Image (cartoon, rainbow, N blue to C red; front, side, top):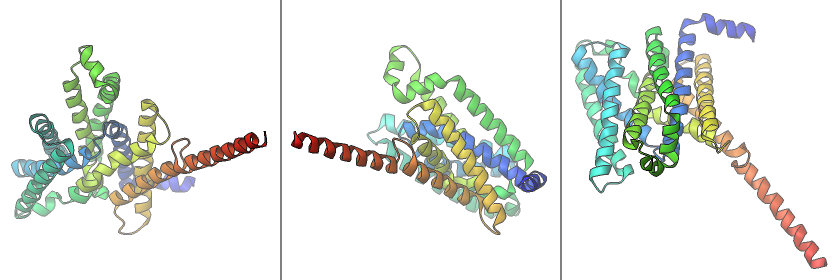
Length: 306
């Protein structure tokens, strides 16, 4: 076991991918908690797909495949897409899910068009933009990890600083308005942080699967507790375990894509939590219902005898 751990730290590629997957899991798990509780599960799907045209346009404007440049483009378009969704919901009769569908399809379609334009350029293959579609964790470099670490660190620090405001936004925004808090600005800030979490994971799991990394760890954490703080900690833990375990499994299997394996591990943790979590787990509730049924029958028999 010790020899295996030493071999991991000696392998530069595996060590880099493990760090990137762990950072992704922790950040997406914690921020995905707010997305889940606000019933905005499709937000990650819409924003991740909307980031694709930003990546392509950033490359077209700069001719650079630097992760900082590409992720900056993704960040801008992800933020713009979230503002578009808010605008549609506020100034039209279209519901939130309809706005998500519109923004997702339009931006993703635009992104595919821009990718086809990029592919016609002489050096398009060297850009490696296709890896953002389904993810390619094995291509992560030290520079990518530094960029992911900085973005995730900033997002998590802001989350902890504004924890009380975000908690109020999730559970009782009306009270926040009454005490004079700028809840709309807080809402925009939280959405921006979620966009940052999504952007940091694009190169690892891709735009198609990124939404699962927001929702699955948070959903798993929700089964174990009713407290936001514990739920966020568990979601970050489940996300990190998913990223690290998925990376290790894919590294031992030839031609096994890392991103999909990470998502499958994340789903497995959710399924385990859904079944075996105390109080909220399906099996726990069945056992509790069975005990209550036995108690009722015994009480009924006692009453009849009397």
